Each structure stands twice: as structure tokens, then as C-alpha cells.
Image (cartoon, rainbow, N blue to C red; front, side):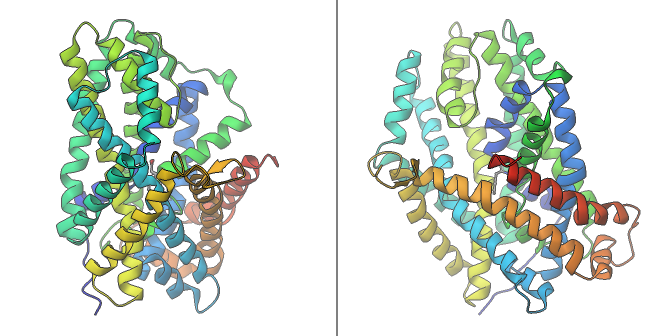
Length: 452
Ligand code: PHE
């Protein structure tokens, strides 16, 4: 029997949970680097423009489909599709969320290992040592797999307690903790000698660096950062109530997500510049460059370095875990509703299957390196297929579906909570979803394959 679905109990809980789904590794390992490389404050202005004009309408579209459906993403699209193949766009969302869960859990597991390594002081040494430490660990056949399974179990444990008692309750302490840790590290980093150069790198507006590539990069990053087209937003919105103001919620989630990304830059760059290390992006930033930065920046005060490193990996694990919970919930809701089983059983199916996927992704980096195609490991293939193919395709189709296929009155009713809220921005919203968002997504898609 399908148990009662439940819903979020408070406005704050709903925002923190949804923002927790959005705030993730992308905020920390990609946004700051892109900002520094692409024109500093000028990039931030473009990024905020993308979030406001394109990210928020796409997020709102998913909110509308999810809340109207009050069910998992596949069924939510089915309800609006009237038996047409549009329902498969919902299925694509579930599939994307499901496939990402496994490989996202691998990186989340690495964060746990680095908490442990910080505590026992394993990250101290020269740059070559730190680099070897990471390659040895990530290519190991046992430890990364174990951590992957452990973090999936933590997400599982939260999810089985349902929306209010699980996801909402956990997000209500995890997100504020993440914020406090972020602020502590920002202060420690900005107090280092020479930190101002990092702040300048991040914020100095350089409009000369802006070009089409930067614009498309900002757009892609905003969609990834807001977790658009992964099923997560739509699934969480299915637990919103009829009173939830969808527009203000989307704006609040976007503000939190952007703020965390900018603060992450203030955490990383001042420290990196104070020791003259050039920051990079991706896993090597987090697991190789930053341990080196912490070692050198706080070499005179090893105890402070120890604390900062530990807090940093706790912060990262919290960011990863809240995203992982939202990803896990996409498939859990799908299984328990479509198979008519309990939430607990649905969650077990997801945890087991994604543990297997995660294990293979992890092993493809080391002992099973034959698990590759076209020069890409299984890990990279998952990253590529979900982020660069499924995400734009799902986002594009969702805009067309909501903008052109779903009855306008239904969309308007959801947008205005059945006429009880102002519909002032409705025209703009619909215009963006019908014309601008699909074209922008198409541009990102073609650009990444070098067509434009
Ligand atoms: N938005 C997350 C981030 O910024 C990434 C993510 C994608 C999370 C898909 C969940 C689902 O890291």
C-alpha cells in the first residue's frame, strides 16, 4: 500500500530543504573558479541575470508540474500529459536523478574520507604527497566504495523518516550549520596576509573578458547549480501545499544558492592567493589544491589549519548530503508510488541499486579501469550523459511542455495559487518559458558540442 505522502510543515523547512537540494558541490568547486576566470564581478552580474531570467522560470515550471501532480516526477508529468508521450519527459527526469545519485555519492563519499583524513592529520605533507594521497585513495578498490555506500545509507536513513520527520528536520539543522561553517572559514581565509588579492581576483569586474562562451558557461552553471531537470525540484514541489507561494519560494531558493556560491569563492580564493597557489576547478581543487593551500596558509598555526580543514570537509559533506537526499528522494518516490510499496521499501531499492552503480563508478577510476568507453571512465560517462545530455534535453522539453502544451489557465492557477496571489509576473514568466528558456538551453546544448 502507498502510505500517506506527507508534505513540508513550514515555509522555512521547505526553503531550506529545497535550497539544500540545490546547494552542492557545484557551488563550491565550479562557481568560484568560473567567476575568477571569467571576469569576476562582471561574471557574477551575468550569472545573477541568468538565474533571475532563466533559472527561476525553469525552476518555477518544475514547481508547477510537481505541486500539481502531488506525486513522483513521472506521474506528475503523466497527469498533465493526457496520455501523450510527454509523460516520458517525467521519466527522463527520474532516470537522470537516479543515474546521478550513484556517481554523486562517490564524490560525496570522498568528502567523508577527507573528514577522517583531516581528523587524523593524514593530509599533511608536501604537494606531491597530497596529490599521491588523493590518487591512491580514489583508485583504491575498497575505501571509496565503502564511503559511497556509507553516505548513501545516511541519505537512506533520513529519507525513510519521510518529508517532515526526515528531509525537513535534517535540512533545518544541516543548512544553518553549513552556513555558519562557511562564514567561519570565510573569516579565517580573509584574515590571512595577502588575502586581498584573492578578493580582488573574485570581484574585480573585467568586462573585457565577457564573450559568448562566458555567457553560455554562466547559463549552464546556473542550471546545474539550481538542480534543474534532475527530477529533484519537481519531486520536492510535490510535497508543497496549496498555500506555498511558488514564485517567492523559487526566488528564495535561488538567493540562498547564489549566496553560498559567492561565499564559497570568498572562502577559497583569499586563502589560495595568500600562499600564491593558482586555484583550479573540479575534484582536484577540492581534494588536492585546497589541502595544500590549508597546509601552507596555516603553517605557522597548525592547530588553526587543522580546524579549518576539518570544518571545510564537514561543510562539503553537508552540502553533498543535502543534494544526495534530494536525488535519492526522486527515485524513492518513483518506486514507492509506481510499485505500490512502502516508502521504506522504495528507499531500500534505491539505496541498493545506486550503491551498485556508485561502486562501479568508483572502481572505474582504479582497479576496474577497463570500465570505459571512448577514453572516458564509467564515472566520467555518467557525469557527461546526465549533465550534458539529459539535463539540457529534459530542461528544454519541460519548457516546451509547460509553455505550450499544458493549459494556460492551469499554469496561471498554480502560479497565483488559484487567484489568491498577484499574477503580475505571469506574463513575463510565460514568455520566458515559451521562448527564451528553450532557445537558451538549445544554445548551451549546441555550444557544448561545438556546433555554435
Ligand atoms: N545543484 C547541485 C550542485 O550545485 C548539483 C546537483 C545536481 C545536485 C543534480 C542534485 C542533483 O552541486
